[in-house]
Each structure stands twice: as C-alpha cells, then as structure tokens.
Length: 377
Image (cartoon, rainbow, N blue to C red):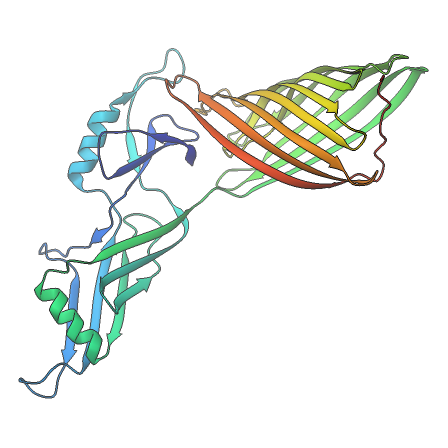
C-alpha cells in the first residue's frame, strides 16, 4: 500500500515517488505532468468536428474530443529504475531484490482540460494504470471560433489538471477487555484482564488477537499513583500462523505544588496508520500546571516505536517523537476548552532522512465524572 508519509526524492523532475508500507522493493510512482494521450500512430488524441452551413461561413458549433493520461514516459521509468537501484535485503541471509515500480490506485479523481477561454472539458479518469480520461464537449458558435484561433496558435494557454484522492485504506478495529479488580489493601489493587482484538484492514486479511494481563496499582497518602502491568497477546497473522506479543507497562503520577506530573512506558499491540497490526513501544511525559483555578498549562512529550508483529513482513520499523504545548480553560466542572499546538518528528529505519510536521487542535471536552484533585499550594 502507498505510504503517503514516505515521499522519495529523485532527480527526475516530473516524477512523484512514494515507498510501500510493506515491501521495501516496491515504489509507487506517478507523473506530476498530465499530458495528451497519443494513439498508435503517435498523434495526440485531440479532435474536433465543426459544423458550418457553407465553406465561406463561420462554424455554427461542433463537438470536441480530448483524451489525457497521467503516467510516466518509458524514459522516465528507466531513469527511476537506475536511480533506485536494487533494494538491500530486509533481513540477514535474504538476497537483494530488484526494484518494482507501480502506479497508485486512487480512491477518487477528476481531470480538467482548459484549451482556451470558454473551451473547457472535465471528466472522471481511470483510478489505476495511466489514469486515462476521455472527455467530450459540445461547442456553440463562439466556442468553435475560439477553438479555431487557439488551434492555429498551438494552444498557448492550454492546461491539463488532475485532482486525485489517495486510497488510505479502511481500518476497522474491535477490541474487548474484561477483567476483575481485587482490593489487596486500602491503597493497593490488583487487576486481571482478558483482552481480544479483531483488526479488519482494507486490502488485507483479518488479524485476530487474544491474551491476558495483570496490573498492580498503588496510591500513597500524598496522592502518588503507580502502576505496573505485564501480559501477553497471541496474534493470529493475516499471512497465516501466529506470533506471541508481550505486553508491559509502568507509570507514575504525582502532585508537586501547582504541578501534576505524569510519566509512563508501555508496550501494546494494535493497528497503525500504515495499515498493519504493529507492536508499539511508547514513552509519555506530561506536565499540567494550574496557573489559576480554571486555567491549566499543558506540556507533553511522547516517543513511539512501531514494528510489525509478523516476523516475515517487510514492514519498515519507524519511530516518532511528538511534543505538544497548550492551554485548558475549565468553563465548568464538567466542561472545558483546550487549545494545543504540536510538533512531530518521524524516522524510518535505514532511512537517512527524517520528516516532521506541525499542527494545532481545538477541543471541547465533557467529563461528567471528572474530579479536580487538590494541589499542595
């Protein structure tokens, strides 16, 4: 599947190249320059049939036919293969593999051709292969005259535009947890949970998972909370067979003056945005500072590493670091507004270049059971 988060820079001006989520030897490529399709004789597929009442009269109207494509030329494909070369093996002991180029499969799209003022065509292109689009338009007398003038001048203002929507892949995840919590003492509890997961990812077979975990929670007189968690989850792989994935976690939260600090580290199993089920290691740090009784400053950092639970998959392990800074205004005990900005850094294993992004969110939060913990002012 095309990985929109991994564009590949290549010295081929009109080529867009993206990595595949599963296979390091597959690259999804398409042209950044739409063009007229050509027939078997090499001529452009653009034709007009004009209607006039006499040889010395102006055209009264007609029909225009245009076919466009969005594909790389054979020369561009050869240049890409020369640049991308041969992929190194994903695992030790495996042979290197030749690169394979393939066109993306789009979810939706539209093509638009502008030949001259008032002479335009639109249509829905093929969503695979060369994205061919055949368009036909009916011309009135004015458009026919404009077309003749533009044709004689070799269409100086002509443009072809493609608007395409990538297929991100539908993902459906159903997870069920059932457990029993036992109170050992006034400040200590032990929870035993059974977990099940059903992950239905488009273009893949269903992956199922089931397991169990044990969690120990403690709370001190000064409201310091700690937890430790360990478990295992058996994942029935879409490719056949199964794999045992370990689950673990530990964390602490406490209040220091006006500050509430939280930190935890965890390992879990679940679907990712790349369209595969992964084992995820995550470290989180969060600071909440009470600036006023209603206004909180929020600061957080999260580090994540994803790897495929299937040892035979060519999914590329990847790491993320996300930091965020925001403010939370508590309108009432149950309602609050939160505005936050974030920065994300992302790195794929064996890639020399990293990617980053920034964003912002505005949230309205309703927490009917929220209790404000007292701070030691």
